[in-house]
Length: 94
Image (cartoon, one colour):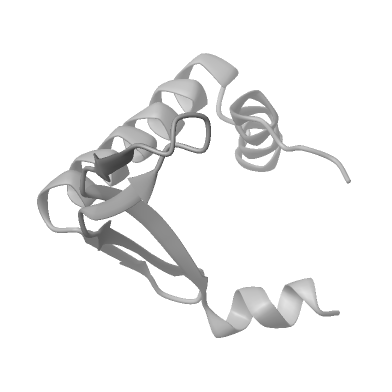
């Protein structure tokens, strides 16, 4: 399995578009920043034919410390889930 980094994405976009790497890097960073802001405000980002990013919440719960058997409260938190779109599913399964 190969990991694709932001640097790899910038390089690929620069090669495909002919735009220099410095400008592409700024554009890619702006896209990621905008996505983070959108998730923080609305909780959803839908990109057609790509997928849906959603912020979901985990409620507060009780847990047990295995070393001391003490009951503690785990605070509520949020996490991001991703559901791929149909076109992405089709490309991955080819």
